[in-house]
Length: 273
Image 1 (tube, rainbow, N blue to C red):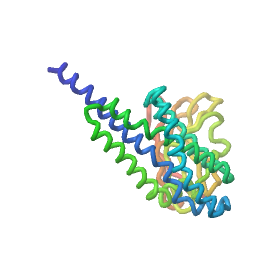
Image 2: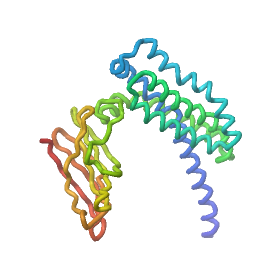
Image 3: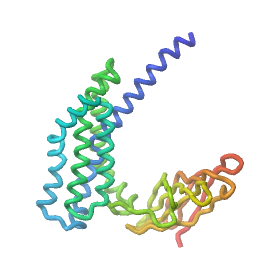
Image 4: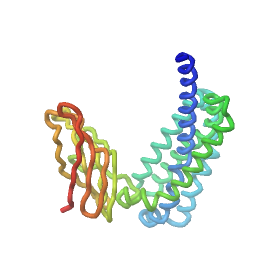
């Protein structure tokens, strides 16, 4: 009886995993592309673009979706749909991240082209992935990744200006971590904003001690500074992480954990000024 249950459960887990991955891939098909249109007025003003340049920026994704679809299909035929999907996701991630560093229209065009090419490679990979991963549920899986695509279109337009932009300090550009935020490695796990201030919490690697320490940074606009935080697990402990932050007015709280003869909960309260 137990063997029978295990045999049925394993394929079910595989199917649900495949369906979840297909939905996330559908999400990636549109999320980064459609985060740009709400930002067009800001990009227009900051880079001093003409109406013609803005129009070209808006048409590039459609042109690349058509132009890169055939190379994407050839990539699928040569290396397989899974490889094509991974390559497409990498291009989307690279182009989207690099777009934040654009300081003129040429760089903005190039990074948009990279992102669009990634989407164009991903899109023809979806139908063969559906047939390969869930051959018994092709109609449902197709509807599911299409749902991910539509959800991405809605989320990108609905959340970019009211939620994502304030959390990013009101700027669409890349922000460099301030000095002191880890000499070799830093990761930010949570962010919140209140008024014109934004706080991000995470962890940083202390190369001198070879351990992980808590990290909190505070930003106003494009300016970020490291906030001194207690680190009760150091120097004897390790793995000190802040994984959540909530801001209200001039006060913010961070929650995480640290290791000191076992893992312990860490709650910090900070007041601005």
